[in-house]
Structures are given as C-alpha cells and as structure tokens.
Length: 116
Ligand SMILES: [Ca+2]
Image (cartoon, rainbow, N blue to C red; front, side, top):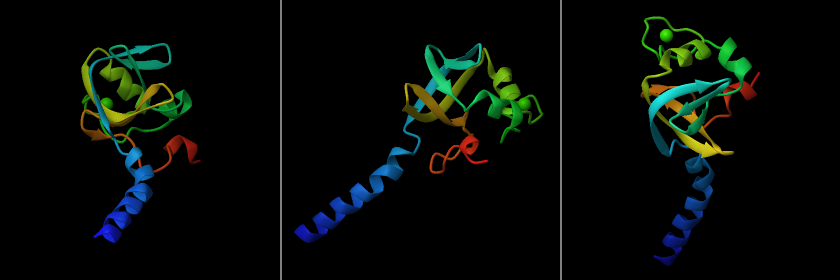
C-alpha cells in the first residue's frame, strides 16, 4: 500500500506541469478595449500579440455576426458585451483559452504566435 501511495505521489508530480496549463479560471463580465489592450471589467486579458490578432483568422465567429473574421475584428465585435472567458493567470494578465465557450487556443501546446 505504501508503495502504491508513493507511486501515485510521483505520478502526481509528473502530471503537475500539464495540469498547470489547463484552463483553471473563468472570467465573466463586460468586455472592453483600451488602445491595444483588452479587459474584462478591470482585469486585463491576453489573446496574443497585436500582429497575430490582426493577421490571423479566428477559429470561430466569436461576435456572432455571421462571419468568421480576423481575431482582432472578432474581439472588436465583442466590445461592450458580456463575455465569459476561461484561461489562466500568468505574467500579471489573464491568458485566454476559450471565448464564450468556443475554442480559442489549446493550453497544452505552445501559443500559436510562438510557432511560425
Ligand atoms: Ca464575426
């Protein structure tokens, strides 16, 4: 029994980095933009660098206007609406993985803007 518990403990340590990368928080409130930064209420939320948002077609029609546009255009369409995000806090901002229940990026892989 002690050996089994020790094995489980070791496995939990090995699994810890992957678990830390999974969406762990939900943030909901009025979505806003100030300059190049995006916010839910007073919390800054991070979708990636400005060039990436402007040049990348969104994964889904986040603003529900019937067209899948660039990420920047989709985010503009969400300004002033109530938005629910999942993600995790890192480097002082909230890193987004889903937008209103739709996939944004996979927390288990490197951010797409780092893979070129
Ligand atoms: Ca759209």
